[in-house]
Image (cartoon, rainbow, N blue to C red; front, side, top):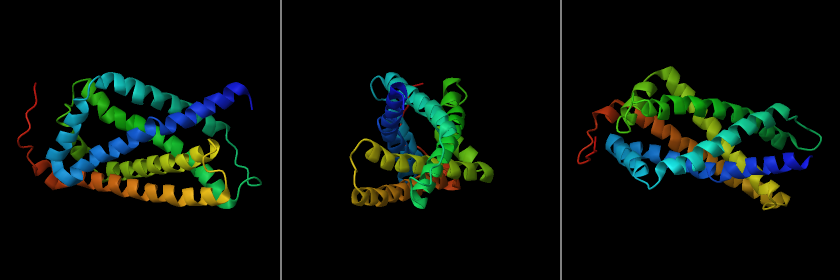
Length: 221
C-alpha cells in the first residue's frame, strides 16, 4: 500500500469518528426532542444549536468539510474494494460488504436530506423555526417515510460497524476476544440509534406534532 493511500485511509477513518460520529449522535438527540417534547421540544433543540457561538464556522470545519472528504473518499474506497473470503470469515466478510453498501446509501441519503433541509433554509424557502413543519409535511408521505427509514438504518449501521473497524485498525481492539466484545457493543449501539431515529421520524409524521403549539418561545425576525 502506498504511503499516501495509507494516510488518506487513516484520515478517512478518523473523520468518521471525530467529528462525524459526534454529529450523528447530536443529530439523533436533536431529532429525538420531537419525541420527548413534540414540536415545542424540537424548536427549542434547533434554537439551542443555532445559538452556539461561531456556529457557521463549527458547521463548515466540523461537519461539511469532514463529511465531504469522508463521503467522496469513501465512494472511492467502495469502488476499489474487493471482498476476500480467504482472509475473513463469512460474518465479517458480510459486514465488510454491508459497510461499503451502506456507505453509498448513506452518502446519497445525506445529500438528499441536506438539500431538503439546510439548503431550503439557506435559500429562504424554510425557516429554522419551520423545519419541524417541513419535516412533518415530507414524512407524511409514506414513500418518503420509508426512504428515510432506509437512510437512517444505513447511516446508523455504517457508523457503528465503522467504529468496530476503527478500533481494530487503530490497534485498540487487537485480539479476537476484544473484537467479539466490540461487535456486541456496537451492534447494541446500532439498535439504540436506529430505534431512537425511527421514533423521531414517527413523531415528526404524527398529526399531533403539528397540533402542538410552541408556547413561550420568542424568535427574533
